[in-house]
Image (tube, rainbow, N blue to C red; front, side):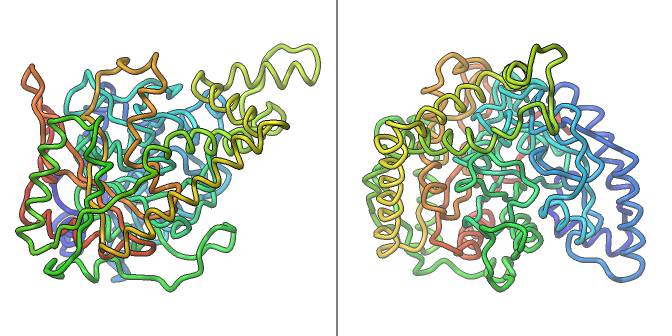
Length: 489
């Protein structure tokens, strides 16, 4: 049951072979069993969750169910949910209870899905390891001594450990795809603007995008059908016709042009990861795809550009957390300015403070043109690289991350090394393109542990259906996506 696809679970519910209450309780029991160690969830409310499941059963009985009605979904704790603790992984919002529903939460509620709980994350989505959360680090279910990736590490660990049927995540520079790679699941960052950011606590507004995290591409297609759609409350939401992202899932790949960027297979990519990716590319050849060599020459500039632009936007977005309106307020202070300073010093963690300082610096008078403006110009060049590449190919394949999951604490004192974990993912966000990671195999550690490797698929704007088809075709001839970590049955 716990390894069933969303479609299979929907069939079981429709045929009354299991009720949503029973299915939900099964996942809640697993959370009770495994979450104390894995720490994937921050907030649980069984009363609300089971009430939603009971309502879903009534909807199924009335014949008004949708594809996800009654299915338990975990929500990243970056989405405001009415009546739920919503912390963004920070002490700053430790006691904040959502007064309304984010667009994504509302979409799943409307579809009749069950909210299992809020998942752990790097503080304000700033991190690549899920070690910056105020509520403690998340452990990778494949090896508890290793990180699950970040910032959506709680969602990734929850899906990998089968503590939910699927989960939501957000991706600012790879925060869906990198943890999906490190935890052996599928994760998709849609085209910027396809999923409303209303009620999603902002990190870097021109980069943030919500997306699905699940076992398979088919599952993600069903979730995309729910998550996408125009929302007038979000000024960046795109007015487009609703799509059925399952429509192309069984199309053959014959004639599909697959681009391989030479920059993604250069120095910095682990030899064990490269071997797995090459084997995946060989499978695409067998499926009839045409392999094309391409170049993305400004790839190496994506990290310095990102770490100018993202902190600049973060320093602006996080200025609202001042101890006045909501969030943490220092217990003792002398005057208003002292309250601001102490509340922010106490409420934010080290990584958030680091990025606020960087962002404030690059936006300051005398440095704006030299750093922020220059970074925006290079961002345009990065987008142009992709425009040129897609003249020669339909999708782009490569590694999601340069390595498998690393040991907890291994990169904690080396921010640059941590930032390099996103070398293959950040450019996609800078260009606003869709990208996803799917399981492609495993490497073996010296102590015999299997660690997942993710294959990244990048598409042109609004090409999610084609990407999902490419991933689904691969998952029909491999079983990497159905493998489960040891000790979580």
